[in-house]
Length: 217
Image (cartoon, rainbow, N blue to C red; front, side, top):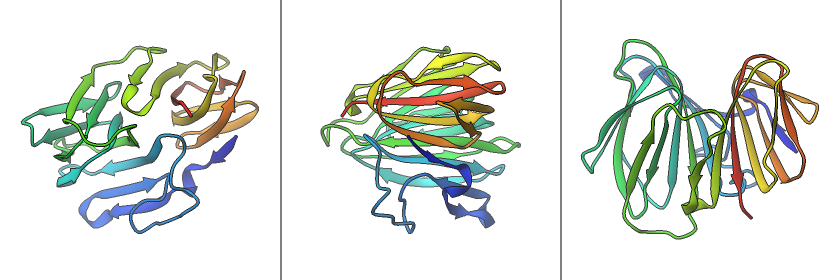
């Protein structure tokens, strides 16, 4: 188990434009050849956008992009004509496939924090697709077969336990609160990379929200 603390992320974004980014993996100018990916996961970015701030239209390709809002509302628009508002509890999945362009913005009058996770697909190319699941239920996995991955959302009360999926690669991210993962305390923004997980469990220290990526070899 490799624990990475919130304050160890690479800082980025454009604070003057109301954009603050924290990257868990090698990203942009923060090139780290020893931290390029974990399983299929190639990025886990925490983005904080002030009111009106956002990312102008930009391209993606050959990437499965999953977005999870922590607080606030994210407005998404892409060149296929889709425009949606993503809120806390929603899972947004954009399959960039052969190429897509999109805009992400905080159109509300309050601050926005969201996580964006990029996964590498098994095969490049194809036709872009988009899906949003509103208010995903606790313990309901979201399948990402394109990358051989499952996303598990768990919300724990203090003392409540949850099994960590057995798997070749499991990435655990604490969205809010605190847990103990095999005896190691993880607080909001902390993450653990577990290889060859067998019989691990997480225990809520406080009211907690966890994202767990279960990934095949």
